[in-house]
Amino acid sequence: MSRIEPTADNSTRPSATGGMTSRSELWLPTLLSVIAGMVDLTGFLSLGIFTAHVTGNIVVVGALIVRHNRVNPAQILAIPVFILAVASTWLIAAASGRRGTGLMRLLLLIQFLLITGLLLFSVFTQPSADPHGLMATVAAMIAVSAMGCQSALLRLTVRVAPSTAMMTGNLTNAVLALMDSRSNQPLLEGDTGKLTGALHLLTGFFVGCVVAAAAVMYLRDWAWSLPAALAAVAVALHCGQI
Image (cartoon, rainbow, N blue to C red; front, side):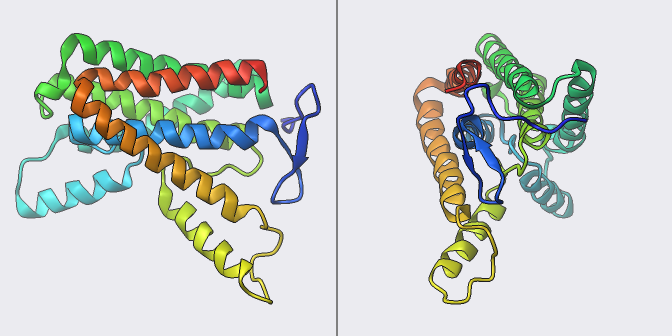
């Protein structure tokens, strides 16, 4: 398997790990974190499920089982569906024979199609009317699949893949990098850009959450149009190698 090669215009710069980072590797994670924040918050408010990561669903399901409360079926299905989405993304990547930017373009397109399909499904079926209903479960699984694709996307195409949906690691990186920057004896070797990168991801995810909260309030099921639009922007920008 070949490694990721620089873009055609050679617009690369040193990465935090000492390699070369293309333009897409610089802007794409932040944009994806905004999308993840939107999808996660929209799913939580309208469908009652964390769609961008499974940790929250595991916690909620465990608490509900012990307390003998009603469990949202989507919260249980989210875990195996996320696994299947990541595995399917790997299979698509392997079958395509693409690597690097070509593979990234393909997977960004798949993410866009999934979120757009979720938008159309939600507009026609209005799953938010019954968060425990069948339509809400189907919508939630489409959202989980889109986020599973996103999670696998960067790990399959970028040298050092950041986390665009799970902010615990990014917050940890930001705090450690900040402490290192204030110390005469830094403990994190060769990670001078980690603080900036982590802050970009944290900010992007938070902005996505805030915008999505307003969108759900005023647009209801049409709120999915915002992450769909940004997913389209990601495809368009990457095709143009901006």
